Length: 337
Image (cartoon, rainbow, N blue to C red):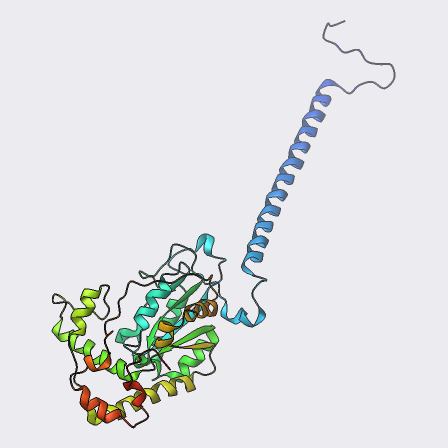
């Protein structure tokens, strides 16, 4: 007998050797096939689970039902939000008038790590030449495809800009109102109660555009008391013949704005309240749905002196307003109602 031959037990004989090798190989292939399918199913399950988890993260159950129209998950075309893609974003716009504290207010907001306010985007005419250009600009901005120095490394949770009333906002109010409501944009109206001081600031700023008192440079906002003192030295002369009508027109302009946009989700702020009320900025952060932080700004107030020291013809101004409904502006209390 061959030394490598196998003894066969009595009874049923074993299959021939080639057949046995073939069956073992076939069984091995079957086991590999099952293992491969199992791995593939597990990978699919993990992908589905990951997608499901992503969806669950984006749908925040803590968001109240009435806030859902104002919570967004933008998908910018110019970059990938990556790990921030599921961070909900609230859109906002600051509506104001020149020399009402909006620049200072915006620097306060931008000191928050989760707020990005992108300045006066409609100060360029081509962006507001008609309704179509306005809406296209708004679409680009609220899709987060608007990159400025206000962009944050952290996940942005509130995104907006500053819009002056005379930059097309009131000219196309019906279309803009419809857009804001449809897009779920929250509106912060920021005005100034003491319109006399605002007028003084406007005239002084207009003068500096030409005079460029700070080393040949025009600055609407300053970051040092020395610069503020230089700009505050100029005392404008007010036209008393049109003073009351100018104040009345400004107040009517603000009132018309609030009336026409009274169906938006909004809050109304006054510059004087931001100065005197510590809780005002907390209310703004709550309105925007961001974590509460202490907000700071490097800007320095320019016109800090009493009113008689700010106007060249103060006696004429005082006489004109005394006894009128605007006499409240004469008491020198800049930050009272």
